[in-house]
Image (cartoon, rainbow, N blue to C red; front, side):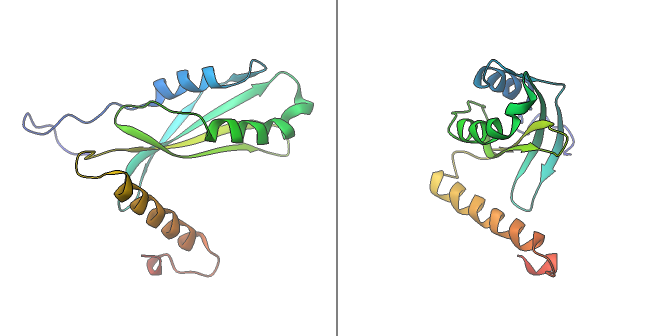
Length: 144
């Protein structure tokens, strides 16, 4: 964390509450959000947070088909988060029938200098690095 300075530009606020409100409006009526949490996240190129939203479903027998429908619906949603972009969305379930949504947001540090093509390049490189680090038998230092 950088020390405060009057000359330093102000960083954008955490989008967690706004993301929670947008997600509440995007969910179908039989799905309710539980108490959410976030974990700070950073890579060599980006700073952001992983937002985790546990969900309760009115009927437990609909969790499996609902997961795929929610995944498609949320991937196509337009997220308006000033100063941040949604980099990844995952809808997960476990064997107990619990459902949760994980959203990775990335802070846009310098939007004037980084256009869409450059952002896509860096995101693609970052995803490739993460896949290489997660591969079994690979040394994480070889990914970059």
